[in-house]
Amino acid sequence: MASSYWLAERRPGLPNRRLEGRVDVAVVGGGVTGCACAHVLAAGGLSVRLHEACEIAGGASGRNGGFALRGGAPAYDAAREQLGRDRARELWRLTERYLDRLAELAGDALVRTGSLRLAADPGERALLEAEYEALREDGFAAEWRDELPEPLAGRYDGAIFHPGDGSLQPARWVWRLAARAAEAGVDLREHERVESLDELEADRIVVATDGYTHGLLPGLDAAIIPARGQVVLTEPLDRRLFPCPHYARHGYDYWQQTPDNRLVAGGFRDRAPEQEETSEEVTTPLIQSHLERFVRELTGESPPISHRWAGIFGVTEDRLPLAGRLPGHNDVWAACGYSGHGNVVGLTCGELVAHALLGRPDPELDLFDPERLIGR
Image (cartoon, rainbow, N blue to C red; front, top):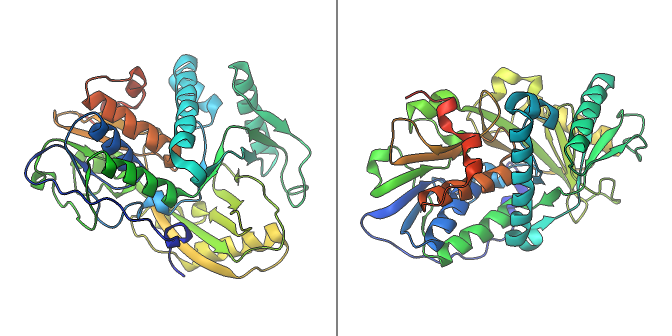
């Protein structure tokens, strides 16, 4: 099946409230960010209409690998160099709080298993050791693991275990978030593509489309590069090999098992970087063949593939999100560009933008100021 396993789960019905005429805020995008932002805005007393081109969670929010990780796309030690030690610590603490917030809202869609970041070779091991030392210096929980179980032993050169991370059924989580938004009064408009922001009847607009931003604003088009992530999912294996999300080769390989022991494996876009820098939401034979071979190497067998899918995410130059008011647009805000880490950071940015629109901005929002990448 060329469709997401997460989206194949039966979706509960959503309350359907229609708001006619002009609203306080229009949100473009029905993934985790848009639903989180709309929920907080409506709970704060504003009238909100959300526009989703396909279905709720139908984009990257329902098409990823199901990882719920603290931090951002850069490793922690790299973030310290990029942002400075205090701001990097602020970012990691923020995402730890939002992992707890995700757990509060998601119910059984999230299981706090921890995650394992693996070194694929001695060079990557040295990088992981540097990140581990930086995390420990700044008081973050992390465990170094030299002894790895089968089938990891001999294949990987050590790992960092991050105890607070989790495994997520991302579509179920976003559906629940959308239901909360609808119950708070949000008008959810599925299958309603926004071709131009001028068509929206709203005092303020939030663009929450991550890698699907093209054509809405030239500044976002220039600042956010769409990238494709491809995934395969097997029929259930006869044993549990991987108790938590795993990732290696600088995040280019990632995998985990579902509760019924299916193996979800994604990545390998570095094997065709120019082709995978695209907004085409389709699988390709080249990347799929790499993923199938990887599944065989991990399991020692050739389990049948039941689902294949692709999702589009947005990448920024510095691999940090854009969240806040857009330069030159007083009434247009954005929350997007998560560089493959949208499950937690997307929730974070959606709620931070909503708080700012309600007149109670969080100081952490400055970490993601769009002005750093988008000129006036």
